[in-house]
Length: 123
Length: 392
Ligand SMILES: Cc1ncc(COP(=O)(O)O)c(C=O)c1O
Ligand code: FES
Image (cartoon, rainbow over all chains, first blue to last red; front, side):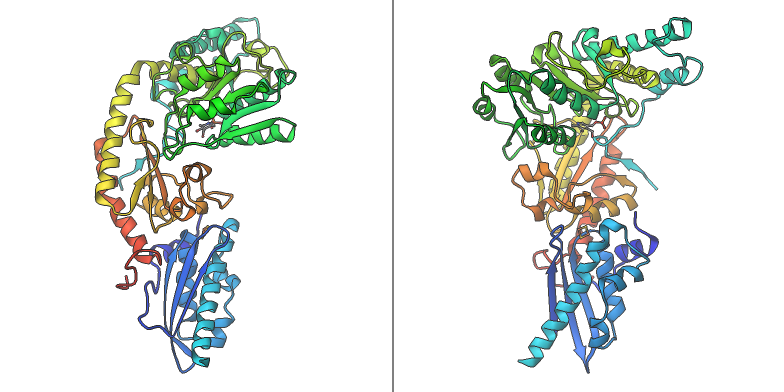
C-alpha cells in the first residue's frame, strides 16, 4: 500500500517530540478523518533552527509529518511557507490517492506554526 | 519471523480436508449438474451431499438450503426476495444499525425503491433490546433482519427471543449468521428463524460460496433469474467445487464445534485479560461474555488503528481496525459509532479474531509485542496525557 520511503518515515519518523518554550506552535485537525497534528518551532535569525512534531493519525499522516520537518529544518521562513502538501507528498515518492488528504495536515500544521511565530513576534 | 494470523472474521484458511474434497471437482469431475449423463449425475450427487451436510449443521431440511455466491448474495436475496414477495402486505422493514454492509446497503436501496426501513439502535455492548423491536413492529412490517453475531465486536444477539417477537406478529425473520455459523451452536428450528445467511470462507471453506436457509413456506422471490438450478430459487450453473467445499466445511464444523468453542474461548480470554492488564487506556468493545468465542476488539486511546495495523504487520501479525483512516469512506466504523464510542476513541480500534489453528504461543506473542507498539505510537501522539515529557 505505501512505498518504501513512506514506510521508512512511518517506522523511523524524524524529529518526533516537542520543543520546550517553542517560538511557534501549530495544531491542525484533519476534517476528513479526525486526525491531529502538532508542530513546534525554534526560530533563529529568520530560520527554522529546530522543529518537532506529534501526530495522532494514520501511516501517511505520520510519514508526511516526518517528511515536512525534514524538508524545512534549517530553511528560512519564506522557504518553509512555500512547502505545500504537494511538495511533501512528492518528496515521499507519492501517496495512495485515498491518502493524499493526509499530506494537507502536515503542510497546514507547519504553516500554522509559522503564523503563530509571526503573531507572537508582532506582539 | 513468526507470523500470526488473527483476522479470521475477515476470512479463514481452507481446511486441508475441504481442499481435498474439492479438488476432483476442479479436475476430472467437471460435469454440469444439470446434464443427464454420468459426469452431470456425479456432480449433481456431490451438490446434494453438500446440501445435506449443511442442512445437518443447521438442523434444517436439505430442501430448505439454497446455495449462493456467498454471504453477500444470501443477504441481498433475503431482503430483496422478501420485499418483492410481500409488497402487497406492507412496506416496512426492520433491521439494526450494526449490520454488515451487505444488509445495510441493500436496505438503503430498498428505501430508495419506496420501502420504509427502521434501523434499531443497540446498547453499549452492541445488544439489540427486544422491547425496541416490539415497539418498532407495525401492521405494515413485512421483514425483520437482525444479525446473529456482529463481525466487528463479536456480540451475539438474542436471536431466539427476537425471532419470537417478530413471529408473534406474523412477520418474517431473517438473520445474517455469517459470523456465527461454525462458531456457536445453531438450530434453525429451535431458533424459529425463517431465513439465515451463511458464507463458506468464514468457516474454513472456499470463498465465493454461501447459502440461504429458507424455512419451507416462507414468502420470498428469487434474486437471480435464469436456468432452473436450485429448484429455481437461484439460477446459474452451480459452483460445484465451492459447494462441495462448503458442505465439507459444514460437516467439519458440526464435528469440531465443541472443541472449537472451548479452544477459541480459552485463547480469547487469555488475549483479552492479557491486553487489559498490560496496557492502560484501553477498552474492550462488545460484551464481555456474550460474544463470539474467537473475537476480541479493543480501543486503544490516543493512537490510530492503521498505524497499529502497519506495526503489527511488521511483527508478522494480521489484524483489522474500524478506524476512519482504514475505511475507504474515511469515517469510523458504523458499529463502533452505534455503541456510542466517540470518533477519536474509535480511531484506535483493533480487532483480533482467533481461529482453529491459533495457539497459546500465538496469543503470548501478541501480548509480547503489542504493548511496545502502542507505547511507541502514544509517544508520537499529541493526545497522550503528559505527552510532552521526552523526545523519542
Ligand atoms: C456478518 C457478515 N455478513 C455478510 C458478509 C459477507 O459475506 P461474503 O464475504 O461471503 O459475501 C460478511 C463477511 O465479511 C459478514 O461478516
Ligand atoms: S490521517 Fe486519517 S487517513 Fe491519514
